[in-house]
Amino acid sequence: METASVEIPEGAIIYGTNAQADAIVKDYVVYSMGTGFIPIPVADLVGLIGLQVKMVHSLSELYDVPFSEERVKGILYSMLGGILPVAGAGLLSSVVKIIPVIGQAAGGISMATLAGASTYTIGRIFVKHFEKDGDLEDLDIDSAKEDLKDNINDAKTKARNIKKES
Image (cartoon, rainbow, N blue to C red; front, side, top):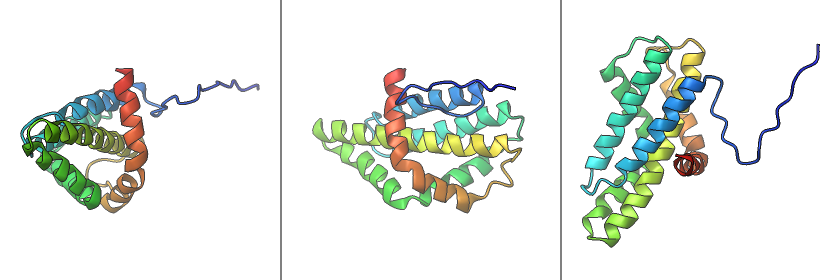
């Protein structure tokens, strides 16, 4: 039996095997990047967590995994706390918006990139877990934190590319 091969263009973003899950993650990356431009400090972080919860809810429905908002919030807070230096930068990006014009622009751009990157990585973690028939109760949070920490910088580039595509 002969196998087919597909040439993938350089720079192409390959999200995974489930096109619906990929579309959900991609949409929420774009939405979450918009939270970076909320001019009120810390409101952007609240909006980001809310969008990430909604993304996991959408993925849960797609994979027919029971959903618990409280459980997802706990997982997300734990995961984001695991990347404290990056999360700290996000908080700083949020707070710098207090400075009129320059602070809002710089904080918005920085926060948008971080929001997109964290949403992309978190989405990929849940897709991978759900594709292995996992649920919210058996997610290895320590492993997920490591995955987030290890991939956040690469995810910044992927988030920017997703934004350009949209």
